[in-house]
Length: 269
Image (cartoon, rainbow, N blue to C red; front, top):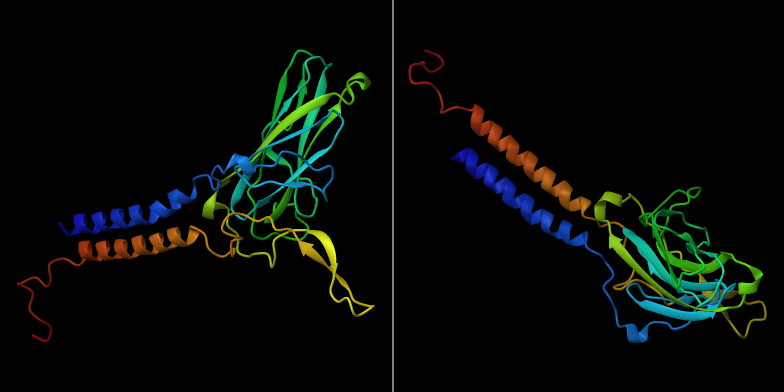
């Protein structure tokens, strides 16, 4: 009975601790109100249209244009960018490409997904997708790991005939993220997320030698940026400590016996 109680307690504690960890593995971006979704795209990094995760943004343009959007990704998230290009009725074969850059404008490799696809002459639409690596809270300066901050999406055609240049197209784009949790946590965090400035303002109008400072973009994840130190690894570490203590108690209960045998005389006799 004693061993059964110990094992039951251990399983109960493990189940309670695993509940928040399982909740963290659900997608972090919930669908938002599409009425506020952007209906146009920028033409460069500096004019990229800000996009919230979970929004279905649309934009119209011409083949040959560079279309830019930006979104925020926090530590522990694995963003997936999906784009749909609606092609004109008549066109030749053309190749479209979806690129994702981080706040330092470093191109990020897709972990999986078709980021470059070729549309046949009779195709009416083309779907592209790019799933990034999990965003890390901290990384070495020489590494190209995804870090918390602003990410840029660029959509453009990379191969088409000159006769199709300038034909009208419409695009749809959506960004969602999956919260990976403590399995991707690292010991460290950035001082500030990689959120570039969108304008320059003077620190002092009276001083002729005043310096200028960047006005940071207002885009950020829902709930703000994470502190970088908490993850569900703390939960599993606590569960491991509790299970180890219970295992020690159970082992002691198994090996201590029922006490001194009655026929053994006490010491000193």
